[in-house]
Amino acid sequence: MATLQISQGTFHLSATRNLILPELTIRSGESWAFVGANASGKSSLARALAGELPAAKGSAHSDFTHPVRLSLEQLQKLVSDEWQRNNTDMLSPDEEDTGRTTAEIIQEEVHDEARCRQLAGLFGITSLLERRFKYLSTGETRKTLLCQALMAEPDLLVLDEPFDGLDVDSRANLAAVLAQLHHNGYTLVLVLNRFDDIPDFVDRVGILAECELTHIGDRKAILAEALVAQLAHSENLEGITLPEADEPQAKPTLPPETPLIALRDGVVSYNDRPILNHLSWTVNRGEHWQIVGPNGAGKSTLLSLVTGDHPQGYSNDLTLFSRRRGSGETIWDIKQHIGYVSSSLHLDYRVSSSVRNVILSGYFDSIGIYQAVSDRQRKLADEWLRLLGMETVADSSFHSLSWGQQRLALIARALVKHPALLILDEPLQGLDAINRQLVRRFVDVLIGEGETQLLFVSHHAEDAPQAITHRLTFVPDGESYRYQLDTL
Image (cartoon, rainbow, N blue to C red; front, side, top):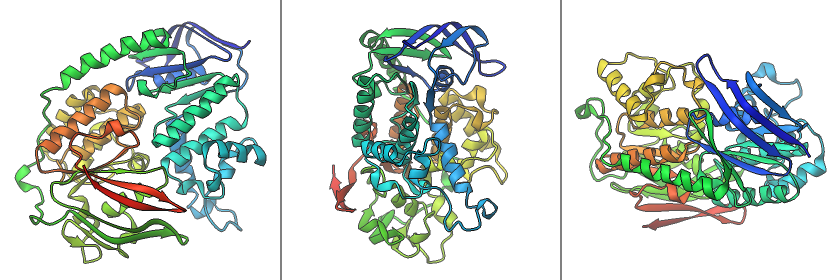
């Protein structure tokens, strides 16, 4: 029986940070879940268990011969690499289109068409095998990488945030697949932000705090302790206030009583495949919308129309902030009214920048800083950093932070100008329970000011802020979708 055993392990993360694993034994066939706050060392733990991070002190011994690790960062890099293939000097002479298909990604290391199709069937993505990987939704790319990880039948599978970016049905499907793998004798390690993402079959749990494994043991006993800590923290969120907007009297004004968004019979298609199929939708003053639907339904495409980023916005009857698209407005005329967070923005924020400058860029709707920053804007950004508990990393590189800390900084970037329209597309992805509570509280306070309207996308129903008044649902209808609009 294979065993991974660590005793008094110290793993160097930087000149000043270490991951401490006092005692840990994982045996073949066991299933573990490790849960911790952002920057607690979860991703480093995943690397250590997969044999990618050696112990500087203590002992770490593993009999597992083929460990495989899958993470959000790996997904981000793979998507980025696929888009980089747009550079013509990377194309082969006879290549007609850029990027690999889903089937090619799954079989990157192990070529076995039958097994590829079998795994795709398990995850419900058989129809995507011939699609270009770079055009898939976040949830679809996650399923693709899970299939890729299972192709070689690893004897230790380490999954770092496997459920983030998946809709309700896909999370249930993944949990069922993992349960089957567990019953088939696979050794599984799940690294999670959410206690409620721990599947029922997992019976061993570890808790990370400040880069140290503080608790390990029976699932029921450990979760009881963790729940107490969450409830105690939630009391500290009452009465929270947000930093002011920059010169509130200078904020751009909108004509009163006019809708923020009006889309009439909207259609977006790629290669004659409809992504949005005759959607009519109006967001009136005072309305806060939740947008729900399966992975790949077109939710992010709809949001890209609203942000002005989608080129097919010009071919639709679309009015944003009282300006008809294509009537001479600039992209900045649209973006000045919007605060925005999404997985695609997180992916696109590749410039070298300090954490403070990432937050400051929210004033200019840019990725990076390209114009003068006022003293007041710097002061307000520092207030946001203190509110997030991130003042000590203000001058650190954005990309040196954990994934969850990066997401917190991007959320602050979206909120700094107290926008007329706040668009949150899976904003809580990668955040632990405490920081999810903090962000929901930020949103509730901002909406309570009465000058911001919300578009909220999440596959977790419990993440929706209390302010939601309307819901737009993408309902599967054959090979396309129909749309259900409800007042709550």
